[in-house]
Image 1: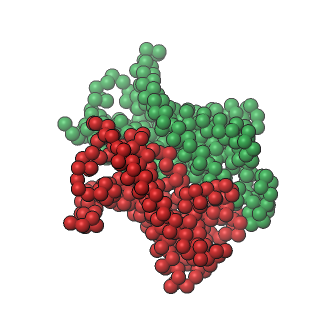
Image 2: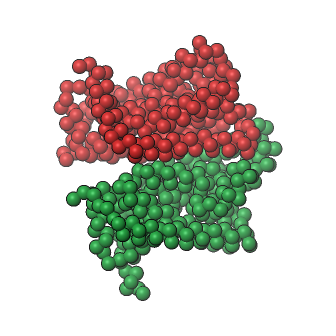
Length: 287
Length: 263
């Protein structure tokens, strides 16, 4: 069992170490995302305070009262989304895209391994390597630095209880797996179409809006809420955020985790099946 | 051949390269259009939920949104060489080759690529601006049209100044500085909303420190006839050109000090 997992762990470790070396990129990402978060928070605060120009301390006027989540919750949501931006499926693994262009993708077939597992380990490690430094920096900034500098109204607030925090941890891990499954699908599309551009151009914007990254899903019109909660991208950000905010309990919590697990299973099966078909009649360019 | 004719020739070569694979090109354009349209979809959803923001209507916000997107899209089209300068010119040593040619370095970097992809952002910016104009009363056309063109010119000058500053900074770091994204993409994000939604320090920083407000918010207020200082607001886009001039001086100084990476 352990012996069988060794190559996949090695792929994971190598990719993780490579990604962790890009410290300047992580720092740049951190600053950009803090800036982005603050602009967004100012805009949400303006909307929540509404036409009445309500008090700036988080209590809100009539307009804010109709929103399903409070301004404080939206602010925390914004910071979680900025902190986990690297969790989004940003596209096909760039090294695999290069391998497809040069024809080196044929080497992948020479390895005595299961390619789906190989690719998903690489994808998970790459996402984690980009995610961990950025997320830590943003938590420190939004959870500690902002309150200490008197900007408590703009700060990230901790989950209301320990079980909520634990559920968040489970849910965000499932989000990570889900994202890796999507990246593997994008790898397969790249192998089939010889270019990463098309698949990336379709999936990245979809993931950004449907995960709630651009705007909390709860603020969308009430009529589409059920649909939004059932689609796969909700598990990348919105559902973990709801656990953090403590708004999912009991049966709804089980349903949310079940939704994530079901999409992971579906995308895994779809990915394995289409990978098998793709490799069956693989065309390779270059030489 | 004069400078402009040379730039046009650069642009033609770049265009024919990008449309060589029309299928992939169209798919990329469609994806980019969808991505940028989502920015306005999010604004629409917020207005649907909250109705109004500090007295601004969705039509008015559409005007700010359209203007800043048009400005940035035009800049991205011509300024891509500066955006990628550290990676594509400095680290590779390609800049040294460019210095051998008897033409101004800025012109040659501008000619590096005439990018078509930002035209998707331009199209959606223009569409949202038109939507905003149909929903919001503005001052009569003889004022609005020249004022809009003047504001767009000032905005392109401002964003180009940011990209040139980014490129000049990369003489020190030998890589493209992503941190400048807070002024480019972050500037677009901030400029999409009226500035009075923002905290005072942010508004002042983005108007006097970095003249984004002077090329987007102030002229648009003048177009809506809501500016408290109409004369100053009409002249404000000039600040974009002043910013560009400062960044060009900085660029010239950086080029003079340039020592090649040698690769």
